Amino acid sequence: MDRDFCGSDTGDGCGRSFPNKSSPGLCAKCTKLASFSDGSTEYEQWKGFRQCESCGVAWKNLDSPICGRCASDNAKAATPQQGVATDPNIQNLARTAIEASRAARSHAMDARITKQPVGQQLHTTAGLTAARSSIGVGDNNVFITAQCRIKSTSVKDQKTTDPSCGQWGKPWPKDAYMSEVLDEYLATLNVRWSNEKGMALIPFVPHSYDEVEFRWAGNKLFLPGDVNKPVGEVYDTYLTGDMARYYSAPAPTTKKAAGSQPQFLMALELYIDQPKFMARRRDTMSFSNRGAPAHSSTNITTTFRKRSATATEINDTLRKRHTVSNEGGPMESTFVRTNRANLPAVDASTVIHLKKAHTTCDPETGEVEIVWPDNSDTYEGVLGKDVFATGATKNVYKLSIGSELYVAKRFFEIGSGTMVTANENKASLENELIRLKNAEWFLAKFKDLAKENGVEFSSNIIISDGFLIREMGMPSPASSFSSFEKDTAVWLVEPRRTKAVRKFSGTLVHPTRRDKLGQTLSAFTHFVYEYSGKELVFADIQGSPMTIQNVDTFILFDPMSHSRQSDSGIGDHGLDGIATFTAQHTCNYVCRGLKLATLSEDKAQDSDEDEEDADK
Image (cartoon, rainbow, N blue to C red; front, top):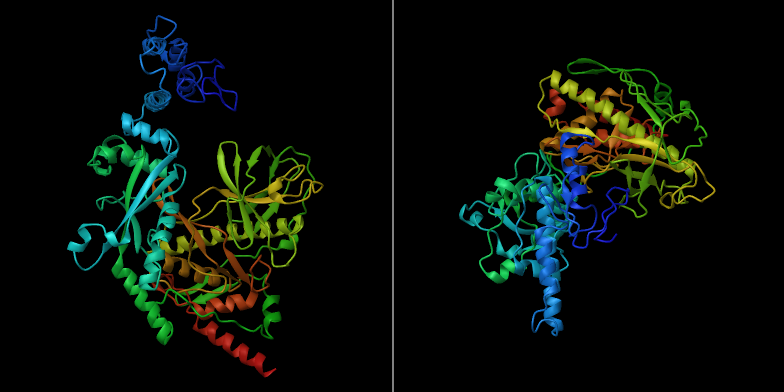
């Protein structure tokens, strides 16, 4: 879209052309009007202001067709200057300076219109440098630099950053999350660190391992709830207004350095807790040399269990409700496994774009029901063509519905070795949604019991929201289905979040953790096993750190599960998967506080059944 034209892709704007308009999109007056409610007093006042026909800025007392600044600029442009017109190099330099000046005016105008503090002002040298560089003035990037500060037993060594680690930086989009920046910068550092120390550093998660965390230059801390926000939001919070006086990077000492500094700059440090790293390193070395200690957090040996002769008898009781005995008395469970055979078939529909499935979770039993009604509402969505993220079995794409941002997931691998069909994808995604809803149901019960017993735990854990949609009509290119497979492309949709992921267990690996978040998740897995009547175990527990309503939160997603009937979804190893958990789990203070039964009896029972199998 031309810079002179006032308009947008959605049809907003006045449609007029302003020769000296400083940036593409809406003119200054239309931008201001868009910030008010239609018909409000402010809207009517600004609507009546006269507008400069050259730059598009509205002025309350403007009494001529163009404003004074544009009149002055036009007069200067019309007056030839000796020696300038004939020198192409000077002409190019002048044009560059004009463009930089225009961009600076655009930035200042945006700040005035939105009534936000104006960021770092551009000087002529900096403007020219930015205009020539790949980091354009006024773009949507923030340049983030990093150095390392290492905690040690010597206070003197911590007063400065460590020059041996070097420093680096790159521009980041303002909508990227700080956790993604931390992951990439830590990966850069770990190339050198792991070569020298033999192990990589672990990134920071609230209430978890905190060997490495972001701090501002000068060892200044982030305020609670800010470390996982988007880059642009962090920049606006700390580097504009009054807080910028404290958190801004030290001013360059030379004019040359000032000219090369990006307009939007965040100077950060990676704060490395070396004593914690060395303690984990000693634990790992101890495991390698003598076997896993009680508090080991890595490399847990996977144990497999043969399917016993009693499996049929156990499976016959799966639909019964259980009373689970433990040290604190009976734990009454109302959980009932969702019977996939009872879910209704897909109804044919003739809607335009997207249709949502209707999903309910019984608050008493945790049973999940998924239906696709004919008369459900229809939505228009925009689905990305490129893969946003990928895992071992699913691809993830960006999706927007209205003003809401989501990700849409589909299966490309289910273990069959062939291309996933539309029906297989739908059935597998329905199982994934049932796992999410079951995890949410169990987590609520877990938190209630912990609060009732006065147990301290990491309460900032939540389960990702999720729902199913189906494309109506010809499937999108992202679905990979043929054009004749109409109304068949199904997606699991979740809110868009950071791509930074922290794993706490594997499909058949359940490490013992020492951190608060890790111990809470381990106890949660134990609770689910017991509260489900030993029918279900969650595995492959992973999540992302996010800030929700200024609270550091850990969002779990894509949980895997093992069930006695091996029918809970992709990756379900049945009784073998359940036995692996009971063999590897070590109870912690949360388990004991919840008065969960120890798993020693289950381990002994598994051993007896294995011996019976071996004798046959």
